[in-house]
Image (cartoon, rainbow, N blue to C red):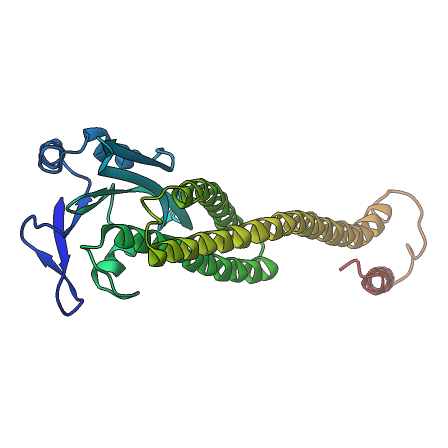
Length: 317
């Protein structure tokens, strides 16, 4: 799918029907024919379009020059997306987003539609000018970093909820959901470090820092990315500690259950022992008494109650 957007005079981004100079070309899971069309129309290599469609593609930057004149550039970064794991629990993953800049347009290539780009289309975050290619590219990168922080905050709130549920009920579902949250942090940590390498390389390239406002915007993107890295590292350590705590809690709960069952078994065995003794075919106390059965039952009940009180005071229950 290929869509075209352009910034109007009133700073509104609207969708247009066809290609125009200064527009934003948004490409989502293109077909082979669409890839051929874009490659010929924009004079860019097919690899620049195909690479971002690979889920495992690494973040990187490529600058191309022809006779010392800028022709096109490619920036690939990892972008966060909300998803579900194989068991249906909330999980955050990352997929590549390719941003190609030419002399005439900016092209974004993604495997699936991303909320961060939808926000840009609806202009929910800030003003965008699709004709200012470098600034528009940096604004997309800033939005990606912002979404990392946004999803990190959502993930942290989700983990707090899971922590409360685990304290109240140690069910497998809560543990599986917690494992999905752990995986999300690993995905974020890896993606943010890869994006950091790209941003560090961009700050050294004169193409992205030729104007003071562009350089300042790129610095803001780097700061946002570093903040996301710091938050991810912090909560990764916290989650590691929580995992150890949960393991201890599970072991402690198991010990408590075993202690309760053992105590309950001992208490139930007392009447059984008495009944077994008086079931022997030998001369026993109270065997000639008229109320022997009642006396034995009362005595057994008293012993059972005393044992139960002792276990209860020792907190075996």
